[in-house]
Structures are given as C-alpha cells and as structure tokens.
Amino acid sequence: MPSLLAACVVHQLRSDAGTVGTTAIDKRPVEGPVAVKRFGLYADVQVDRKHHGGDEKALYAYAQEDAEHWAAELGRELPPGWFGENLRLDGVDVSGAAIGERWRIGGTVEVEVTMPRTPCATFARWVGGADERGWVRRFAAAGRPGAYLRVLRTGAVEAGDPVTVLERPDAPTVAAVLARV
Image 1 (cartoon, rainbow, N blue to C red):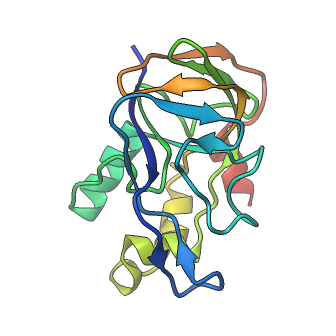
Image 2: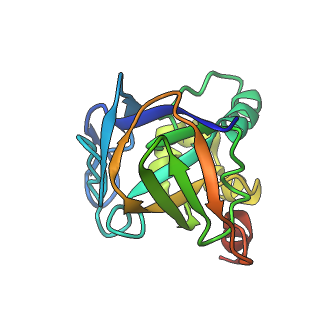
C-alpha cells in the first residue's frame, strides 16, 4: 500500500549564494504527527516566498523510488528531506501524477497536485555545486521532479500513514508539464 515514509520540515536555515542569501532547503523528518495547515507543515518555512510556498506550493512531495534512482546515480544515500521535500512517499508515482490529482494522506488530510518542481540554482548548490555540474538540466531531463501540492483539507500526518488516490483527472502528468518548460 502507498504510504508516507516521512514528513519533513526545515532543520535549519542556511546561508546561500543566491539573491535571497538564505535557504530553507535543509529539511529533516519529524517524529510523530505533524499538523498540515493551509500553507504547509507546522514548523516549516519557505525563505524565498516568490518561488516557494503559498496555496499552489504549500507542500513538496517526492517519491522514494525516485530518490533511490538518484542515490544510485550520485553514489550516496539520500534520506528523506534531502530534495527539500516535505513529504517522502513510497509506492506513489509522484512525477507521474496528473495535474489536479487528489490524494488523502492518513485519515483526514487531502491534497491536490498543482505543478512540478522546477529545479533551481539553490537546489544545484545544495546538491553539490561544482561537484555536480549541470545538475539543474540533469534533474529536469530525468523526468523525476516531484510535485507541489495544494492543501484541500487540513489535519495531521505522520510516517506510516497510507496515501490514497481519490481522483485522477484526464490531465498532463507532473513530468510532462516539466518537459514543456
């Protein structure tokens, strides 16, 4: 059964060479239940609100299967939160989800897939900067971007919660939308 492996919030703000000067990409798993509010997980933060957060990007989900692909490619372990994601899911084809697809996580939380993550320079620096040249293009070309989610129904989630697809519209997938960008 598809499930939530981890709910992740910012571990610490980090200095970043980008225009904002700080990033909240360093996400780590939370023990026990965590509240899901309209704008994301309780105790999480988005520093660059021009490009992250809000209704359309309240949560970022990434698939364990995609993380395993990148772990093999990069030759290192990529624990939950490493991609800056709030939700690490197992058994859910996150990048293959249709725009508008709705999921229930746990007993009450409902979310809607809104768009793919578009990789950026902050993400490239987080991954390894000069050690991973071309990361933004490589990540985008792989078609494993993960998805941003809108919160439709608040509640709480925790690792081990089931994930159920409630509705899958006839719409482009997350990966297909990123490929058009």
